[in-house]
Image 1 (cartoon, rainbow, N blue to C red):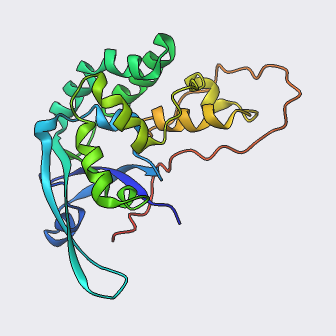
Image 2 (image 1 turned 45 degrees about the vertical axis):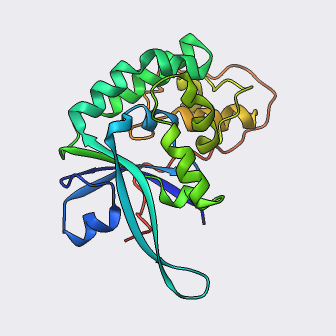
Image 3 (image 1 turned 60 degrees about the horizontal axis):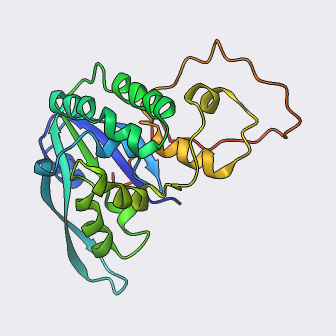
Length: 225
């Protein structure tokens, strides 16, 4: 079972999934990042959007403990503006202008028409892929909104900086992608809410074997609930 991050649209201004449940707030899990936090999600928020989250859980001895960390929540309109202002940053992170622009444009499109007023990012499960306290500290560094954040973002997205993602339409349409690093980076660069129109795609002739691509879940089950 994977450790997931969640991008959530809800009626309550909180970054605590347990609080959303306890208050009976309306919500929709927009996208799930499996064993990662997708790159565009970071650019929807600023450092000032980080709030304290206190999660109660059981340790290996069955004792209840409180894990405290910071996670972001903001108004949808502000998230859209933050992402709009992050165009140059996403392109710089991608290290390719054309590809970075494709994934940024899709991310902007994915945020259109959200039903509820707030957008929150729940990263907790991903922290537990390593030392959760150290990962939580690294997570905060991702919101400096400059290139100093890139190394921390790479760590939490498991992004391979020496590989480019595939072109967006090729990533969604082709059944013959063979470069695992490029596939993983494409998943990381994808906002993951909506699909892509691939009707214009023509598969180039290739002798490469067909492979299955594990993309981000579009309508996941929130395992907390």
